[in-house]
Length: 349
Image 1 (cartoon, rainbow, N blue to C red):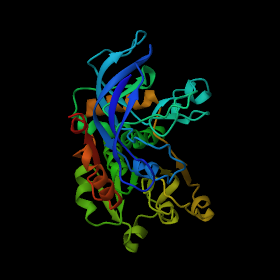
Image 2: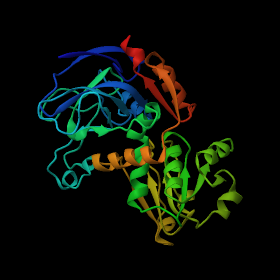
Image 3: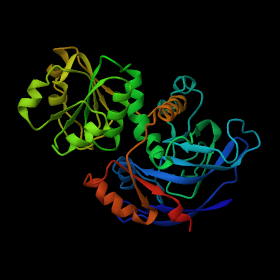
Image 4: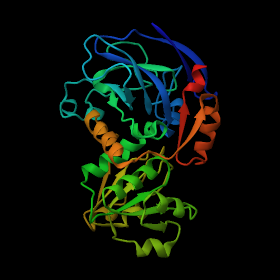
């Protein structure tokens, strides 16, 4: 056993506090990773508070993990001690269903084993995430991380990055496409970067005029103020794809009206309340709403390799572990540009 320091939610109401637990010894097909940086995702807050269903307390969040391998199991072939590695939103799946066989483990018919707030398959042992000093994972669910990029900015790629990269690739977005990105936060800023890198004409859709300058620095070509009726009317029937990253309750209809014929709105934000979808917003120009959830291991590796070759990382604010509760408060006020990342050295001393 390896004793691990962590921060955990002990219930849905109180702030996160220090927590210690034991990681099992490295199995034959596993690697142990000394965690260097852990991104802070808005889903960490929702899960810790039980907003998305029952939580397994104590709950150690964190699924944007970058670190260095310190041990490898006897049968491991894909990794060596000393290599950089990453772990994203899941650490196992059934490996047998069609989705798993196709390399889309995130859609596993039995349900993927989440990096935290799950049970290790076939056991009653909870999974604990990246707000901890080390993690042990099967090599088939671990990613190679290049040393070309700043690791602090790489960590959020394991969730915010792949969540936006995957649907853009699925829809074949590239040169000649017009893409709208709704919401400029952790997900939105990565959607802007990827869509622009793929050659699309990118428009930021935001209710905050102050976001225009930042959006254009990130690669957006245009800006539409969604509270301005004239700008919204002028943008009707414009976009081939809209990446909707908004997690606050909102109506879909105003944004569906911005899609061109055969356009698609991709939902990657998760509002707590259901959104209404007027039928006429879809049928008049054969428009579609599509959901998308992260990516499989192969696609996530593809994204990390693409980022290494194209110098793409997340915009981050680095914090100590002890600042996590203040970070949660700021995230709920959208007061971060654009992702908090925990320097795990702050927990090891």
